[in-house]
Length: 142
Image (cartoon, rainbow, N blue to C red; front, side, top):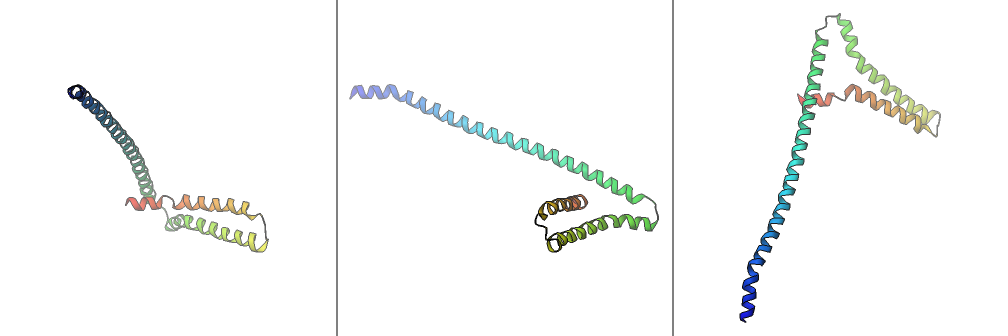
């Protein structure tokens, strides 16, 4: 019994030190993981601030372009034609899209119409994105 208590008395401080080392290791891993998350968060924040700055700069450039265009002194009918260009191009392209779809499918019965149809669908998407793509972003800014 005396030998057992002597062994326990000698090993108890060592056991406590081992538990402390394990605890410190676990704490260090947690701190490292927390530090890594903070670093990733800071990187994301910096990149989002950079994107925001680029977006604001682009928005300011667009505003200045519209201001310049609105200050031009021309005839009213010229301004009317300029204002009709975007809607007319869009309307004509959509009508042509509908007509092409009708002709390919109903009139010509083209079996491989998807190749032509897909190219023109991409063109319509490009036209729509070009004319109206930045408007939703500008409206969300104002």
